Amino acid sequence: MNGIKMSGALVLGFSLAAFGSLLAQTSSLLQEPIVGIWRMHVQGGAIGIMDCNQGGAVKSTFAEGRWVSKSSAGIEHKYQLTYTTGFPHIDEITVSADRQKYDGKNNKGGKFWAERIPSRLPDDPIIGKWVATNEGKEGLLDYRADGTVGNDGGWTAMWIKKPALPRRYEVIWAGGRYVDDVTLTEDGQRYNARNNIGASISGVRSDAAQSSQPASVTRDIPQSNPNPATQTPATQTQKRPNYFGNSVSP
Image (cartoon, rainbow, N blue to C red; front, side, top):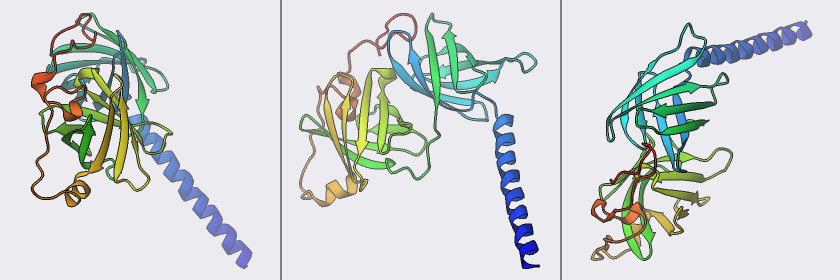
């Protein structure tokens, strides 16, 4: 009798687990294939991040706007993305059948493709305020749960967690101009990074940094530093990557 009861409980547990798995798969299929976070590879070698939500909003390293489906009878996953802030333009993209990649082009002559990356967790250890040091100069950074990074010089970036690499992140500044490869320490209190032009950056959580500094210390925010983590907008004079088919100034 006990064997029958135990067997019944096992069957019930298996059925509930199977139902939960089926429900998750169905929910995923009902979600538009464009929804999620993407790592973009742009013509000319630049990279970027694009984040699309189910409500139709899209935020990328280059601009913000809205997406709409252009699919025909559900056969192809085609979308039009209209950006109205930053650098206004229109993207036409097609998501692959497995929903893991897309190819696209825009109305400015730029071509690109992207790969899907895991969604961010709201309690990711990178989230919080940091003091970043680059060539002896310091700047204040704010890593936010929505995937953006702000600094006290007015620049913004987007961050993603590198798939299958613990405590590794990629931070993309200024339309792909600067890319930081960040490694977080096991205790989550510090990080080390190197960017795409060879600059080394280190970071410490701002509460920890402030507790170790005298109250009278004034941090020097640099005016000519090769990384926006510690740079003000006025000092950035390089050309923007070839996203629009030609280089444009910031």
